[in-house]
Each structure stands twice: as C-alpha cells, then as structure tokens.
View 1: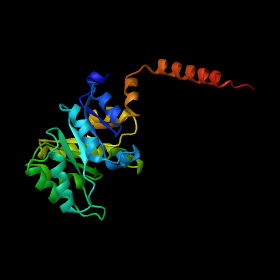
View 2: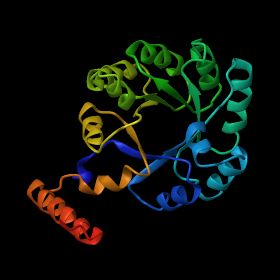
View 3: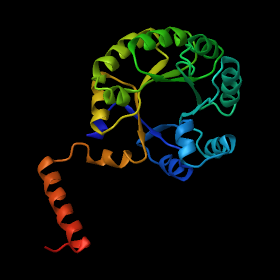
View 4: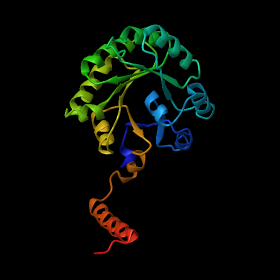
Amino acid sequence: MLDRISTKIFADGADLDGILRLAEDPMIKGFTTNPTLMWKAGLTDYADFAQRLLEQIRDKPISFEVFADDEAEMRRQAKQLAAWGPNVYVKIPVTTTSGVSMAPLVRELSEDGVQVNVTALFTTAQVELITAAVADGAPSCISVFAGRIADAGVDPLPIMQRSIDIMTAAPRSELIWASPREVLNLVQADQVGCHIITMTHDLLPKVKSLGKDLDQFSLETVQMFHRDAAAAGFTL
C-alpha cells in the first residue's frame, strides 16, 4: 500500500545515529528536527550536530530551526544555517513567543533565496499569511501541526485540505502534516494531497503495518498477549 502513497515521509528526530541509519532508507525522503527534540536527545552543540549530519546527508532536505526570539537574531541565525548546505531548510516559527508574526522576516528570507520551513502553524489564517510571504521566494515548506490540532479536539482534515487550496498561490511551497499521532495520518495526508508528513523515529516502524489484513493483525495481537503472559510467568 505504501507504494500508492504520494505523500513524502520525512523523519523527525535528533538521534544522530538513528538519522544516519534512516538516511539509507529509500522510504525516507527528508529530515526535520527542532530545539525540543535536540534538548531531549541531550545535545549541547547545535553546529556540531548539524555539520555531522550534513557531511553524510547531501541529497535529502534537512530542516534546522532557529532558536532566537527576536527578528534580528532570527535573521542572523537563519542565514548562518542556510549557508551550511544547499539541502538545508531553515525552520522559522510563525510567531515570536509573544505572538508577533514573523511573516515579514519569512518573506525577506525567502525572497533572498533562503529555503524556509515555517513551523507551528495551526490555522488557515496563518497559512494564508505565510503563503503570501513565500509565494515569490525560494522553495519552502509550511508545517501545519495537524496532530496538535487534533489534540485540541478539532478535526485537522478540513484545515489541511483548505491549506492545500490556499498554497496553490505558492507553487514552490510544500505543505507538511506535522506532529502525526498514528499511521492513519499518513493515509489522511495523502488523501488531501499533502506533500509531506513528518514522523518520529518511534512512529516510523508502524508504517510496515500499513494495509495489513485485519484478521491476521487480530491473530498476531492475541499471540502477542499469550507470548508475553508466558514470558512473565503469570499464574493464578
């Protein structure tokens, strides 16, 4: 079934060895990371981490995020990150921590040739604003956090479908279904025409269950319960 999916899978994480292993997997078309994932992975040297990846991954896009919270420093960091390699996309948050839109900076960077990945979008109004900002610029991505939208009890599908429609005004930009929670999200992303979905390293192995026969899946689940109970040595 995976061979009928047009949506590209990008691996999302900050495990250096895991990323390098995934770089050899033809299923993985690109990579994203963010400061939170890097912090959780225990990384302290941002530049060293990025350079070690870029030394070995040259033919797939990799997104690295700025971590500043003011426009001037974001601009400086973005240009530094972009200079690290032609396959680098620079993640710019849609706003600062105080809610100030970064659309003007996104427009400046994009039209200056920086490949941006604008992140943490949740609404179609944000998608409209950022689409206009990247419409005449370099190749770009717009990351809509569909998984977190669903966490708020809101169906993300209409938002993602509307985002695709909006982004026709920026033909060099691709929509990312960010923060998926299950493999079904890959199918949903493909159904609405989403260009890319990011998947964490713990979610990626579940892709092999895509299209699996449900009767067989049921039997394997029963067998797992029985096997694990026996391994635990449970008695009554």
